[in-house]
Image (cartoon, rainbow, N blue to C red):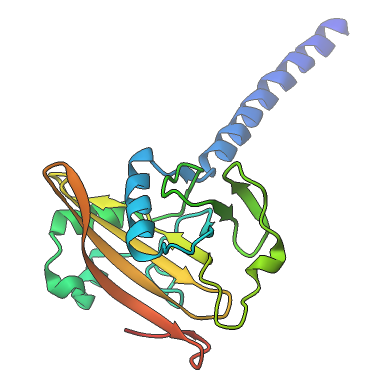
Length: 219
């Protein structure tokens, strides 16, 4: 009797352990991919060139990258989308578009690796902030829009992943600025590298949201 009890116990362990291992592997596979460190210099350059002013004290950033190029169009970018829209008058290299599309098929997770020189806060959706540079928290009252606007707070920016061409001398990035009052805009930023220095070459406005629209509008 003891022999059969031991055999049953061993068989139970053998059957259970693979299931536990499978659950662990599945749990790990659904974790969002981290954004590569090589993308952050382009995020910094985008913030510095397009959004920062001498008055800026805080930049609020979505924790997850956005895999779509319009708030009202949740589809991931495709080669056909770029062909139909003819962004930048069709001047983007095909290898640059392909890499951008491949990198933006799913959200990736941003980390506290920004270096644009102003305090920033990472937030998840509509919830509370889940990461911030190592400085005191800004009171919530500061985020309330005052008469004449609040240029010291950029709330909020959402980034895509960066695409590169094969020669790694051109880059493409999408940035959305959706403000709490419902206004905002979405931009494609085209960077080029000359003599080892990256610079913003051109900007395409993909959508604009105005107060009277109550939401994102077209180009």
